[in-house]
Image 1 (cartoon, rainbow, N blue to C red):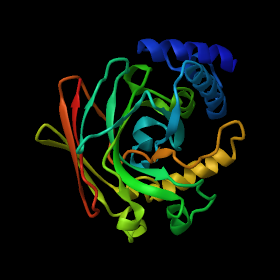
Image 2: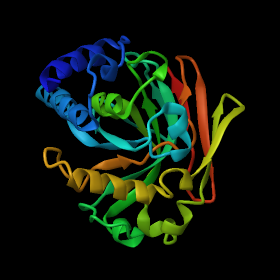
Image 3: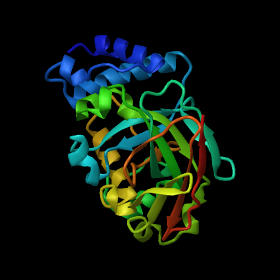
Length: 267
């Protein structure tokens, strides 16, 4: 598989949002590592056009979804200034134009104040974090019916579409954050209907464990930049991912942690 050829296709489908047969079907033997190589070329193309990377997304950290989607390990992608939206008073309007089969994912994100260590120690990881916030990622899939392999996901920039970031809370304001994160509960609503609920432990045991996973994976990818101060890292969906359409209104709320939910209008 030629990463350059696959990257050219990536550029085209990212800019037109049309569906194509899975990369892994048309490139038998495609590996996750080859997918990352193609995604790096997409990244270079975007940077050459003025896009600025602002963080990373981690996907498929929710182990309750692995069997359903047929993907049994997490992966990551890049978040850009063109794809991030900061909510105002925990409300946001999110355009869906240009996204393929978009779905909503309530998550937890961190802003780094330093490069996190290669460690599973929650306190060591917290020492590298400036603030925590609720985030909502809008993921997309360019393959029909969301039928993917891990290689399809790594190729397509971790299926990233948009990232909405809620009000940040300084780490010092939640001194017991490490113990609260696995226990938090999020409720996802469409209009007034509860669509899903999830807990922090769904993402590899804790959003901090998700961050540790990303540090470890990047340590094994010398071609990919390591995490750095200032990056925003969203750690994976706490529920399932649900389809969204223009004109819909969705909201989130939390229990067990002092983070505000969000209200999102889709256009």
